[in-house]
Length: 85
Image (cartoon, rainbow, N blue to C red; front, side, top):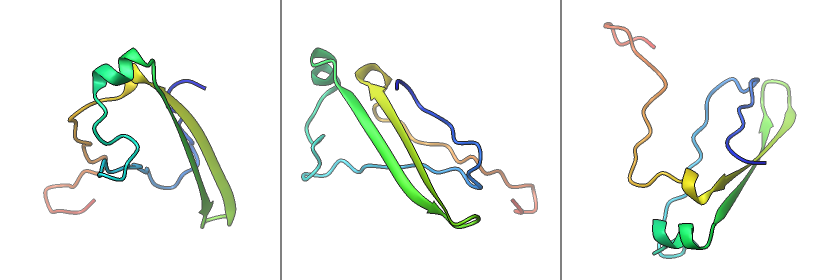
C-alpha cells in the first residue's frame, strides 16, 4: 500500500499526529537520512465507530519522499461571518 487512503464513512475528519520527542524513534532523524535509507513509515489506526458500534481499521504507508517537514495543518472547518460552523 502506498500513499494515503480516505475512508469515506467517517463522520469527522481526523488528523493523527506523532509528536517528535526525545522518546520518539524519529527523534533526530533528518530528511537526508530518510532519503538515503529509502525509509517507509507504516501507519495503522484502529478505533470503534460510535455511530454504528463498528470496528474501523485503516493502514497506510508513506515513503520517505512523502514526508513533509515543518508544515502546519490547516483547519478543514470554516466559520461564517457570525462565527457559526
